[in-house]
Length: 437
Ligand code: HEM
Image (cartoon, rainbow, N blue to C red; front, side, top):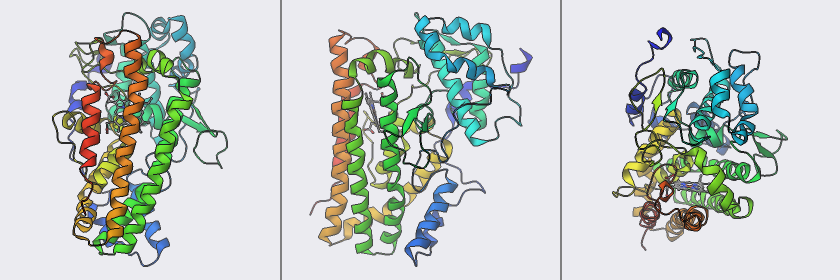
């Protein structure tokens, strides 16, 4: 086991602080207060550079740009992972995924010079996470351990990337698509899923709808920064215009969210898709957590992949100062930040440090138009959460009832929450941000 000696207990990864660190390569949050916004182009250019330093794209938000890598080189030492990935659905259908992984993979040490390219790093994270989740959930009974051939490189790669050894929203959704035509937008009709578990139309569409939503919503980030900037300058008209732009983007996000109903069959989602996203915290199928073999004998507890880990929706909350402070929401929503890419968490922190510019400005403004524009955005965010509650009702609760599954782990989300009280409280915490006239 010498190869593992230098790997510390994976549980130390669970204690990453929520307070971001502004390293020498990242601008301090005050950076954009000194924007010189004399021309719209100059301001956009400065915002684009600021966002890029947090690995956020001005046109695509948290969706990676350039597009994700579709495969690690087969000739590299990691090619063996990709060979299994290529036929993952087949192994899952044949119920031999575990024996395949155990017989074909060895522990591959990750060296300092490995995976220096960001796209390769993200691809390695996705592949190791998917293979591990396939190993755990792909056969019955579920596995209570992840074998060393996956766990050891997985923990090493996640350390390199400052991430948790878990499948997350940012991996399964944001790093898992390709465009048919790279000159056309990232939207349904021009995107395909790189890898699925059991695969098929409904699984692919569940992720692709979310990618379209993330890409559309990502365009709001620059307007958020501009609104804060203009609020700092007490420029009512420009703040109002930015809020109206944000509202329009929110409408298009809602439009995309509704596509879940047309494009994804709730039965297939419930019975064939969500299972693989589950985690090993608050999950009655794995009450004692999981052992990452070769890393630590201590059982680990981690939440599964959930869009609650979306930095985009978190950014809307942070920007409008929506506080998830109740017992039903606080801990889970705070914890979800740990599952986001590190730089994106730092971005949220930066956005939050400036949230008071907009919110104080709106509160003290006497402009009806400004306050209406602000409330229209809050209404959109509430609508988003209402639509999302409808989705959860159809895709989870109704399926649960039909399957007579009420007492099983399905009463909870893949992230482990008790569903309805959590989602409704989150919606109500948004509603109260409406300004009164
Ligand atoms: C079929 C589609 C979807 C289903 C069944 C679904 C289900 C769930 C569930 C069960 C939760 C509770 C947390 C957990 O335990 O995981 C949740 C939370 C959440 N979901 Fe979804 N979700 C869907 C699509 C989306 C999409 C497309 C987004 C947007 C990117 C999204 C954003 C969120 C957010 C932000 C939360 C945290 C609660 C909140 O902020 O109000 N979900 N979702």
